[in-house]
Image (cartoon, rainbow, N blue to C red; front, top):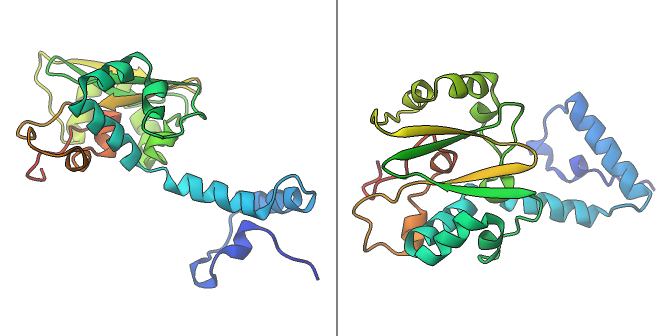
Length: 210
């Protein structure tokens, strides 16, 4: 009896949708690789679980540690991959990871002008707007205007630097630590760090939730 090893076969019926052309191709290639013994269904499952576990919460842990540990922040700014690895986070898929710090004088915002290069190892999947042509073209030409549309208005004396992420180099923005957080624990601080603040289109949350 033929066994269906495809990922689609392991999706509950009530969660399934009509597969697209590319999804069908993916399932077919996966089934062929399993049938030829190149990979196993368990390896596929573990790979999917690993991808699903990659969320902005990982990056938030990194930022929170940088906020409370100046020595770690210095290492992060100097060699981001090595510093992130200290926290047990696997960033080996990234060729180069660069951390930059937002301050009162300089604000960084990240874009991939060619496609959607993004530090998925620590931020998970990129949001749809990050991949859109609208964002990719306009944030370079008018960064302040785009940031304003995200609800972030910067003072005129703040320098805005747009960083172009590539297949070889990804960026992590360390947002400025919000005021009034001196007595918060590292875990509580991580809760203030959002995905958008690590891309640079927003600031970290204030303790009050705003």
